[in-house]
Length: 435
Image (cartoon, rainbow, N blue to C red; front, side, top):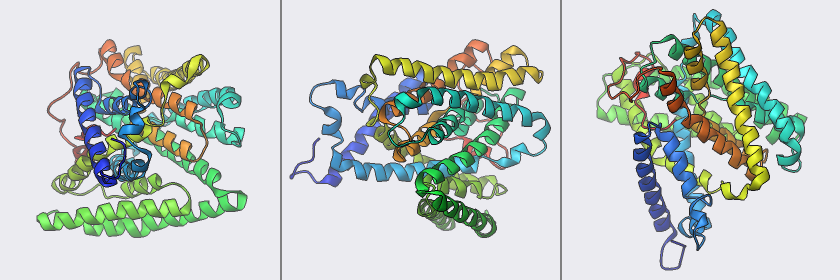
C-alpha cells in the first residue's frame, strides 16, 4: 500500500486504520478465548503488524502498508485516542478511595511502590553501560527506569478485578487503593524526570516546575469549579449532552496543549483534566459522558499500538539482547511480587491472597507503554531497551489471568453482568479494553 501518485495520502491513512481495526478485533476475539484482557491482544496486534512479525516476510511489508509519509497522520490519530484514554484513566483514579484507609493501606502501598523502584533502579544501574543512549546521564537513566519498573496499570487492574468479581474482597480493595496511591507517586516522579530531561539546564528545570505549579493551581481553583457547574444538572437532553461532550474533549485537548507547552508532555495534561473531573455527578450523566469517550478511545488506541509496534523489532535483539530481556523481566516480576505479596502476607493475608495481590499489582498494560513512549521521545531509552520494556509490559499483563486461575482467586470466567456500580466511578468500568 505504498504511497503513489494515483492514491491520495489520506486514502492510504484511512485504509491503514481499517487494517488496524480489523486485525485488532480478530486478536481481541482470540484473546478473549484465552481469558486475556483486550489490551494484551491489542499490544500483540501492534507487534504483529511491525517488523517483529510482518517484517520477517519478504518485501518490507510494514513500510509498504504503513509508508513513512502516512505515519505522521496515523500518529496524530493515535495521540487523540491516547489523550482520551489518559483522561478516562485520570477520571477513574478516584483518590477518594484512599480516605479512611491510610492506616491499613499506607505501608503496603509504600512498599508496593518502593521495592520495585529500588529493584528497578538496581537493574537500570546494571544495564546503563550497555543499553543507555549516548548523552544520557546515569542518574537520569536510573530514575526513569526505576519509575517505569514500579508502575501498575490502574485501568487494566480495575478491569481484571471487575471481571473476576474481586471488587468487594480484601484483595481487590487493597489492590485498587495501593495502585491508586502508587500511580499518583509514579506520575509525580515522571513529571520531574520529564522536566529535567526537557528543561535544558537547572534554570529551565525550575521554570518548568514553576509553570507546572501555576498550571496545577489553575486546574484546581478555576477548571474544577467550572466543571462542577457545567455538570451540575443531569436532566439535560441530547443536545445538552452533546455540548458537554464537546466542552470536555476540548478541555482535554487544551489541557494537553498546555502541559506540552510547559514542557512536561501532553499526556500529563489529559491525565490531570481527568483528575479534576467531578466524581459526584449522577450515574446517568456519567454514563452519557464516559461511554462515548471510551468508544472513541477504543477505536483510536489500536493505531497507537501499531505506531508502537513499528518501533519494536524483537528479532533484532540478538543473543545478548535476550539475556538483557531476562534481566528486565526478572527485575519487573520479582520487584512487584516482593514489594506487594510479602507485605500483604505480613498484614494478615493468606499466602494465596497475598500471591493474588502481588499478581494484580504486577499488571502494567497500556500505562507502561505510554511511559515508555515518553522515554523514547525524550531519548532516555534506545530502540532495543524500548523493545524489551514493551515485551515486559505485555508479559506481566498477560500472566495475571493464568496466575489468578492457578491460585483459585475470583471467578474462573469473565463476568458478563457488571457489579453494582459505585455512584462515582464504577459506571466507567465498562470500558472496552483500553487498559
